[in-house]
Image (cartoon, rainbow, N blue to C red; front, top):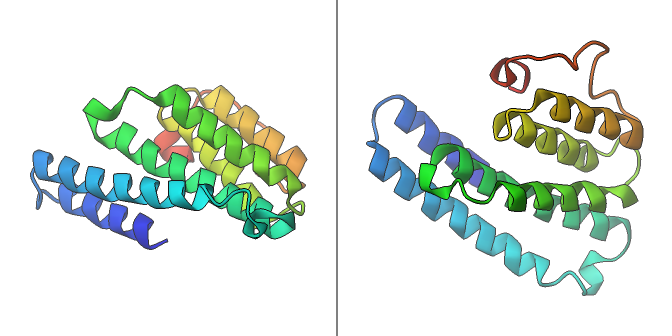
Length: 161
């Protein structure tokens, strides 16, 4: 959560005109790259006892989702970092996949589906795929993630906020 709050602060300062573009991109890259390295180190422990059972599925889901989130922030906000959309999609898929071992309705699993959908709406500009992911999440997680009729073309910035 602290990393996300730092990203939000960096974005707010840039949007308020208090940080120039070059400095904004540099700060965001430093933060996101650091967070991805931290998550990668945690994922190296995947074969240890910490990643076994229900708690392990939850930790894996969180790690994959956080890694994909930080890469998404870079993709969206730093033009030179827009080369890895397929890689980000795969990592979100890993997060959703690891959530299959979680209790239906678990916040972590729901979050994995929602953030994967956000990626498709925000990066891929594909609201139909985003809605499809939410629908699958709704079925898998046993929790209502999408209202009937929400599958049409929409402005992702209005729906996914």
